[in-house]
Length: 433
Ligand SMILES: Cc1cc2nc3c(=O)[nH]c(=O)nc-3n(C[C@H](O)[C@H](O)[C@H](O)COP(=O)(O)OP(=O)(O)OC[C@H]3O[C@@H](n4cnc5c(N)ncnc54)[C@H](O)[C@@H]3O)c2cc1C
Image (cartoon, rainbow, N blue to C red):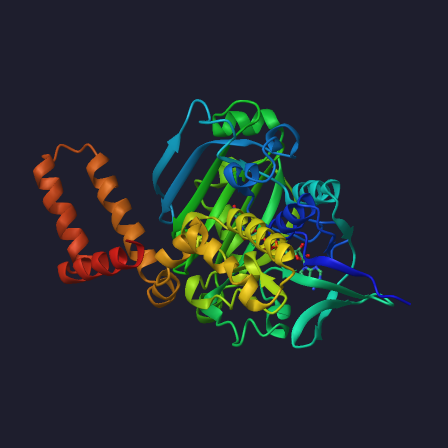
């Protein structure tokens, strides 16, 4: 019996995998997309904000057909104490440009749609199938072993898009060390249903329009992470996440953190009357540039969460995954033209990533994960100080403003001496400059 061999196998039908499969199938390659979930998205979790530009790079007409929940018109940042928040944000009356900048999705619907686009382009989707191992041939990755009977599949190139904690990255020899607890966050989220009209009224937006709220400070109990509330069509995505190293240190459970967020006096009114429809938990790779595996080898490439491509500071992951998936796909298409799938041939994948925002941004913030892990106290101190200062300034009590400034400065330096304020500012600037 002759074995069936494909040009490429993609493992995982998340944003990275479907982007890679779509790109290669559209270029005429024979592509198999293998997904362990019953259908793409069945098991996938995210807060829910996706970015239009990277999706439009693949499917320019996506806005008319993708299952978008709400287009984001306002992004709010809450710096919380236990009973107050300093609120920053940006609101637009009309989304700029041809494609929406950001929009919310529910992954169970979105991933299914995105994988169907790869199928329409010619990729062969195999759902409900776990890739259990890689098949090595002549010193290169030459296929995958699935959990199905007669489940070996062969290809010139295998693109690993199997998400966080990719054991296949280890099998391929791309990841050679254990991931540390400060390099991964654990996030929990609830989908809380509310009537669309009520969402629009509470968040002050029109039909189809949405709001994001990110909450820092007291809500994470001095852990590196943040809470979020995102509006969907008829539900809210409400969640919180923090570094695993910090959960280990504080012994707070993720569920306790979520309950505390929901009980915050400023959050409660936004959720009132809602019904919890789903509870979800998922890990987020937060190690960044310094924790990335090798990105390619003989016959193999890796993209998305499997390669630690998350920019936690900017709440970006899906866009890095889609872009990396597309670039991995383009690299394999080029390699097919040369009929050379060696590591040397696939090395242009890294160059493409370096030229894109993906590696540029991850490199820029390469010291941030360690900084957040080492200085969780800053996430309590500074939200407290900012709230104290603004609260004092806004309290109209007859005290002259210059006296108020002195009072604020005295209160701030009593909690954090001047030399610490300066070193904190310098350190923070160094990791995000
Ligand atoms: C709570 C939370 C909130 C987030 N919020 C945001 C946000 O608002 N915006 C944003 O841009 N990003 C966000 N992210 C990050 C974002 O979800 C990820 O960066 C993105 O999903 C990565 O895509 P991916 O395709 O690399 O991986 P995934 O989406 O994890 O997809 C991996 C796929 O591989 C499949 N798979 C795994 N192993 C196998 C196997 N052995 N065989 C077959 N299939 C397999 C999985 O079932 C899955 O479908 C959030 C993440 C979490 C957890």
